[in-house]
Length: 581
Ligand code: SAH
Image (cartoon, rainbow, N blue to C red; front, top):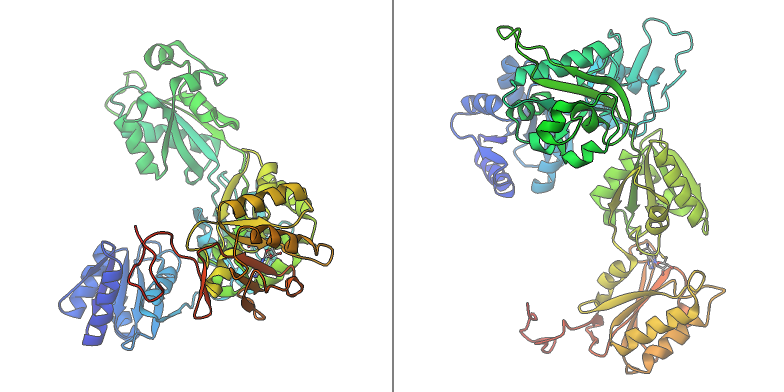
């Protein structure tokens, strides 16, 4: 919950706007400011104070304990011009909260955390648990001092700055900063931090009524004796029949990990070193713990072991079993659409994925478009026009190595672009995330007016990959069905006759006066827009930076804009109809 506190009328007005924007997420603390701040600090994960930073510092100073526990605090000034992340920038989420408050109130977020300010990665922003001297290692990272990277495997992490690399500290002096990425227990100390990848699957079995302490104790013992960290547990896994077993459910909650269950038949098919008759009789599989842990593959680090009954119950039979498996890292491929060109048509999610990647694959001109958004240290693999297959293969191969890869394309990366060749290449062994983008057709439509108000298609006139007969058949079908058509790749130096040919096919079914929109470089600095007609369009004015949108028989030019009616209950331009629902 986010606690909101204000003192003045202007503050209260801004506070109420925030409360209205975040119903169920934000709660207003009324009354004297001092008590309100104290109560909110005790009860909320985050605070937004419509108060001077000085006042908030004085009120909070006696309450602060440490940054992993304290709420994140944002201050907003009287005029609502700035949202200052005051406390708990990373762990408390105040940096992100300042951004979010800024968006609602139109205030500029003020973030002073060094790692964010420099565009570098905060260790605590990896989305993975980190322990040890996080502040010390972060400082070394930020200062550009060498940080020895010791990773057990390639993990899909965001780009680390170039000073963080294996072998960056040659003689290994005792005071060197070291960043481990491992599920193993390692020696702690000053300037040593450990990032915990979610690599371990812990299989558990339990008889009915097994106490949670016995299950958790077993898991902790098993991991400790194998030299493994509980912070690297990806999930607890068991058989469907135990999905509601209270000791297992509570153990997952206490360990802070998800619980996943498998059907007994699935587990029965997993080969394990220690099958036994008891679970076969009880739940229908000769192994629960080992089979569940191994269900997604991996290396069995701790074979099945039994729990120790808690003090007081010595002598009774063990009620729980567990087994631990290390899974291979899964790489991550994000297929990211960059939009038509303008920076503000790049979605926030696309931006986030670009900063989430350690490898960027794309056409050189698109890399230039977003190069400034990448984290320092990102590996850029760019290639020229025509190398689509190679780009797709490279991106998938990098993800297979375990890396976090962003494969970029203009507009939407799934539309005449990289997503299909890449996914044709990718197997089930990597994670794939798609980020939609604003296509050229949509960007062009927005500047033309409302040409896509009813059914519409896109047709690419490039016959490099598609035989002309196929293209022609589709254009005829669109003509026949009276559908608005947007032509992509309409004309290049070597392909001049296709556009006139396609237009003449549409002209067989549409009036010569049918509006046609020609948009070149939509949303880019040299954008140009023309609305003409089927009869008047001069193909020579069209090139590969252009899309051509041809209206249907109902499309009109109204005040210079291209408008396609929604189809029924259409009235005149000045009419009252909004169209049907
Ligand atoms: N994935 C892209 C399309 C790539 S195909 C998308 O979703 O939009 C390349 C063709 O797209 C170009 O030949 C041109 O016809 C069109 N195109 C791409 N960006 C454009 C822009 N900003 N303005 C006009 N047309 C554009």
